[in-house]
Image (cartoon, rainbow, N blue to C red; front, top):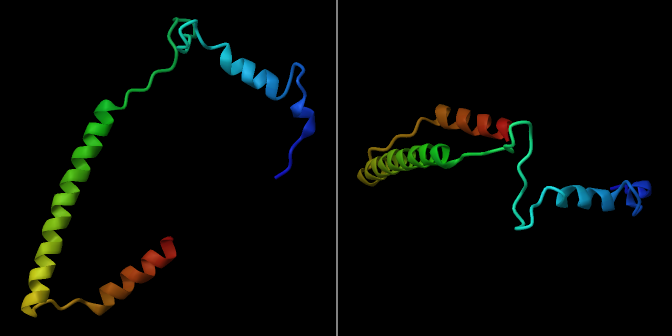
Amino acid sequence: MRVDESNLTAGGTGIGSAVGAQETGKTERGDSARSGASGLGDRVELSSTLTGLSRAWAADGTARASRVASLARAYQSGSYRPDASVTAQGMVSDALAG
């Protein structure tokens, strides 16, 4: 890693001004100040997105658990016969993807 020393001065550029720029967006309470023409800053809402994602993970987890239980029963009964060609294709695809 290379450090450009001209950016390390305490003058109008470099680290000192970067810290100052970050701090100028704060109000007396320490909250971020609102900016922009409408007086509103950036806003991110994750609650509905995360709720949907959580539901999808739960559904996938339930389906996966059901599939694993089914495979376990087939294996224990001696009726599990994996397809070697499909297994090999999956292993190669996984190796090439990662």
